[in-house]
Image 1 (tube, helix red, strand yellow):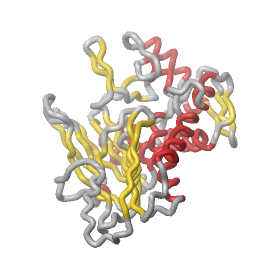
Image 2 (image 1 turned 45 degrees about the vertical axis):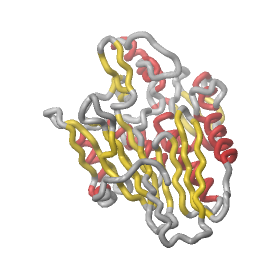
Image 3 (image 1 turned 90 degrees about the vertical axis):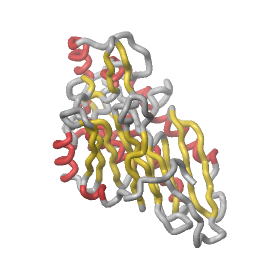
Image 4 (image 1 turned 180 degrees about the vertical axis):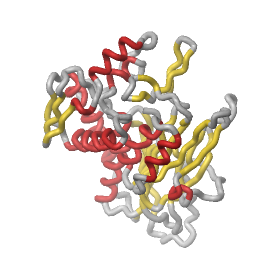
Length: 341
């Protein structure tokens, strides 16, 4: 899935900070994107090798781009297989989101995504209705069953793609690793998915910039809002970054698993704040699949999350709105420069 950039604004001033506390940063490439970790401690507690070993372990379980990964083995199997802790957790959360969103989010959508050109191989042209109808026989989380450590498929052609939730889970795994090292303040980011914790040495909390699309085709996307997070995760899904253009038509990578067709509504991007990144990541995409009224009603039923919406009005003008709880996080001052400090 496409993840719209979320920029961190720690704005360290070191006013009143204890001299013993230092800033440590680790960054690199992973999961087809980049990752950045900033943490504050007296000594360097974790290494880049520690982080990359964890990321490799996650890829070996969850990446459809790794031919020998556990998820690839499941996709190539006829009946299923025994899963590890990573795939089990991601499938459990995915089944929960599938149920809560009435099937808008569905990790069995890989055959449809691949047909539209968002799989591991290139395709020519767009699928017609007959092909979509045929592929939909291989879609549906009601066709998989997780019992203890065994993930079963009731239809041999079922294939999983957990990209819409795995990056959030990966953020949680790295954050949990920092927690295990007794690190009290940190930021973990993978491809725009963020989780933060604690006060910086200057006594302030992390600030996160939320990107929005340009208002003019000649402009670059820009930071529309800045929020302050004391603790928790924030992720964004949008349709203006990742798409395919063919036959004079632009197709978003966000596919409605109930119909097999790209999502077409007024939504431009949805940002979700939740306790964990896997939760925020799991719900940002299905909220994109709802119209604005539906999404706001849905969020009122899930007060443990907050959301910010960028959408187009009926006259084509761009607008934004948010849940009540999200407004309390927004900084009145939108100034600042992107990037951890």
